[in-house]
Image 1 (spheres, rainbow over the protein chains, first blue to last red):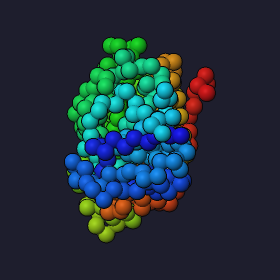
Image 2: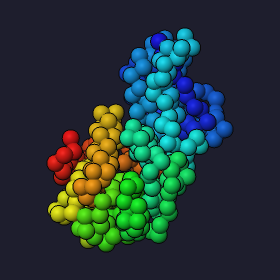
Image 3: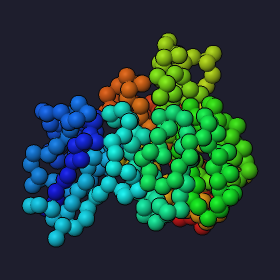
Length: 71
Length: 248
């Protein structure tokens, strides 16, 4: 079980994590963050395998992945 | 108890970046910070910035940084390294800074075999000033100063790695890209090898990273990564051009 934390205040909504997620569970949120971008988020955390491809490709170092997080 | 997974590297300061959405500078910054953390060199690193989109690198890294004049980063890094030979000294430069304005400094730094590392971000144009043509611009590529595409009369693309690999003083020269996770992992390995080359005192090292600039290319972040893969890589072939013995 993994917990993916999005540091939303850094996110600029470029969507690279959305594309590179092999499970296609990342989406851009409907709301905007303080910088005016739609931050990336995950609705169904149970499908996450913790592969960290999203974090590898994130240009703004938004994504942190914790194993065995709040399940 | 929660086990640590993938975290923001401690060498990066907790602040939002000025980079555009989808800019690969952020990935490059993170890789440098990760390698420095893994090697445990945070307290003995001096970063030398540049002028261009990488100009605020000292604002984002949690170690000492210097902001030199345009293109003169290798000269400043030479001075720092000669005074403090036990430090990890690297420059972080774009292609406008390194391949155009700072060509002299870059070439002679490699020829002298200065024991520093250059992290070279190649995005084929001057990003910060609005996307003007650089020596690294691809043939036919449209920029604000080559609106009909770069033609023969504007010269041909400049391959920095191939040139510096011919210098005897250069110990490690590699070109990597950042267009997918596998390439990002390779890029990280190249940075690690470059820093190891320097800490072993083997000579000059450079890592060139093909980087996307979605804003000035007029593409979406994803299209820009495809552009790197399909258009840039044929002109700038990836690989390690020079690897010293003793660095695995």
